[in-house]
Image (cartoon, rainbow, N blue to C red):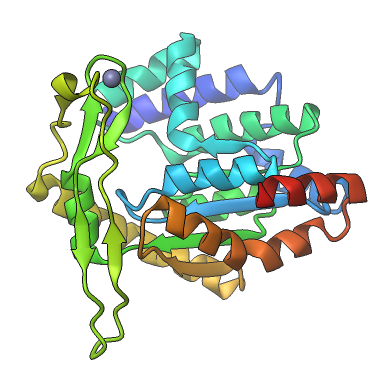
Length: 290
Ligand SMILES: [Zn+2]
């Protein structure tokens, strides 16, 4: 049943996307042709990796804004395709509503379409988060675009659990908050740094409407982290083997972490932008230091 559903979904994916983008069978050749073109130089083409609760989406969005490249969240792409009500979207909805995972091929097709649109619109690269989640997805992504850096965000396990359990969403306006107030002293014996992460508190008007998502219980969070770690290790290995992996441990809140992260990324920004025009370099510099 599930296989049959996947096959029919794939056919729909190909039929709906063929018109705007190449099909999977010719993707590697087309990608190779693209990657040797001069327009591929001087671009930020990064993926952000990290466990649920690490703040990957937030950092991807902040860094993307500072570098003036689009932040592409795989989950948002999938939700948008479903919301569009396209044939593909409707079939994706059927799979998702049964609690099944979308086949990798379908996600990569939607992603290809997005990258193609971005290139047509003259976007200067991307920061991708939420994909790849498996080594197979990483291989598929490599066939369609040349990732230049995989930033691997991490956070001590016990902090991740506290942060996930502290998540709250305002049932009124939909904004996300975090009530976890985390302080862990440094442990010189193990070399662990001090961790200070104040809560992301809601404003007065949201306080009465705060809700906890059903799947943010400690039990579910621990299982989610286990699932993540099992799939993530081969993804990290994949990028480490290509010399593209950059590990970065988060030890504080966003205001402390973001400047430290931008400093760690600076050599990669310089490398990516070294062959781009001076005007875009200046623009990026101004954005990064603003
Ligand atoms: Zn609110």
